[in-house]
Length: 452
Image 1 (cartoon, rainbow, N blue to C red):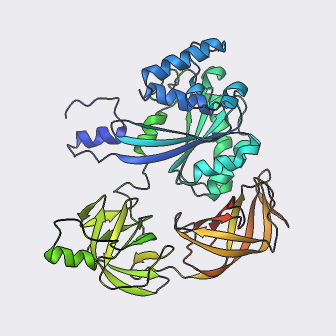
Image 2: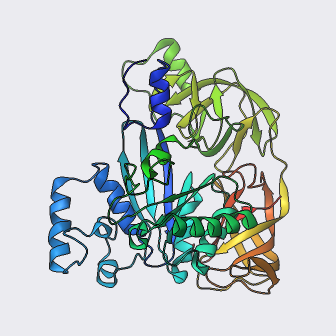
Image 3: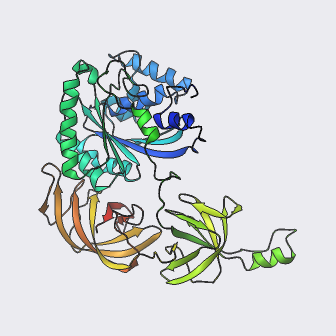
């Protein structure tokens, strides 16, 4: 067997030992959550720093700012790498979602550092909606708190594929195995109550760097992966080894030649371009190939894909999340808001449906209010027919309610003015999610997911 670098992730080491070709790096989205002062920004900063994802000039700037502020825990305040707003630095808290991009030898990452305060729960929803994984930090000295339960409840409702509970500040517990075991047991109990299946619990010290990028020698009782190692090996939504969902392409626009053809184009090519018509959009799920049979919503007609273009070039196939234009065999009445799906997989259209709403706006949502519902590229008029209940995030139960206030999560019934191809969020995160918009000023009132 060949000598393999032990710093590589377990999966990659196994591939090399089996003499397999490494996978093409995939994009992995993850978010952080947790109670105030649990160390979310510090953990993200440490992760960026130790994975060599910070430029030298930024390191120098953060070091100077840390010294000016009299940072008491060393020469470098890692939280400043993500807390970019002036108000965040002055108060020492995270207010808005901070996005950062970095990559390792095996994967590219988009991370969202989310606020921990109750009043900014809506920002946490924003960061977690598209995440492949959410890291929920827990202070190893305090254990699972009410805000931790709130964030785990939101993660469960959003059906984030992977949940990581990082028991932080393990250094302040003296690297105690018993302290970690107690917090881990609390986290697993809440996760089981919420129905979270893929849960990973690991001890970390964001300030000291233990089990962030490399496994720590100060936790010999922990035999699991370091945080970065775990993030590199968890399956991503766009991982080619994952089973693909059926094709879904929300149509953004229809392409037709405008004006004259470019100089030098003549003959058969000119004739083809004069008749050129294609539907364009971003594939939200699945794969499409030339020759595939597809259905168009709301036309309800089936046709064949005769050509695919992506980034200006002709291709034989495309997969999510590529932006493409499709040439179809038949001229079908198609416009923005239409949906192209794999033949035989057209969702049942609905005019009324039940949903879970995450209230984001300060204006309360009440029965009878008229709104707009944006699903994919389609926007239709709607009315809030009924508010069934509000989720009590402390007791983790539903209680009767007549209104939804800011940061509330509630079950509602919506009635729309046109058919929408809605799918249960449980089976499709793209087909089962939507926005509720104020019809006058265009503000987003709530984010919603379709219930079964």
